[in-house]
Length: 164
Ligand code: HEM
Ligand code: HEM
Image (tube, rainbow, N blue to C red; front, side, top):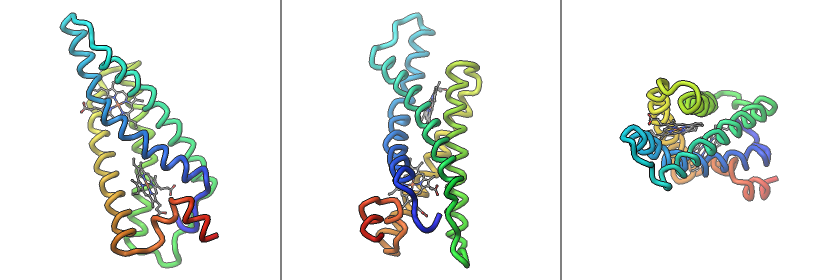
């Protein structure tokens, strides 16, 4: 957690940040596609496109998060000598992100290709991840705007390079 992330870790963090919103923008299309099919209608081309984007983007997110997890295990970072409660909570949240996002992509895959019955867990997972992102972003802004420490800099390549 402390003492710097590598370039690939930073790049993949921001790639995930770009891809996750796509899932929230496209997720609703799947119900529309299914409803149309159940009513014997042809789903709209837009809904079908969004459904496809959702599946492939979601699988990419799962794969990228798995790569990030491997990178993270190879470069575990160190907690400060006397970690505060906030340090421990942040670390727990990061672990939670890896678990929740990889699980979410796997659940989506199962719902789409193996057993749709699990979709309700996938929908609940989407809300859980949203809450986690909310806490994480609030913490990032708190560090950047109020505490004004170096936490945000750790995920910003330009500032990180300037400090090296
Ligand atoms: C981390 C990645 C993912 C996130 C954040 C995510 C998020 C979402 C969201 C927000 C919805 C809409 C929930 C609602 O209707 O309220 C949804 C629905 C759905 N997603 Fe994903 N998704 C991810 C990955 C995947 C993958 C990889 C697949 C399939 C390969 C998939 C398949 C589905 C299916 C089948 C539904 C429809 C569930 C239903 O309507 O009951 N998702 N997802
Ligand atoms: C989909 C949204 C996001 C996800 C899933 C996510 C996930 C993560 C994860 C898992 C880590 C821990 C990295 C590790 O220790 O291996 C992390 C760190 C970090 N993230 Fe995010 N993040 C998201 C959005 C954001 C946003 C929007 C910001 C900035 C406003 C941000 C700023 C940071 C910073 C500064 C760190 C480093 C904190 C530290 O070293 O203690 N993240 N993020």
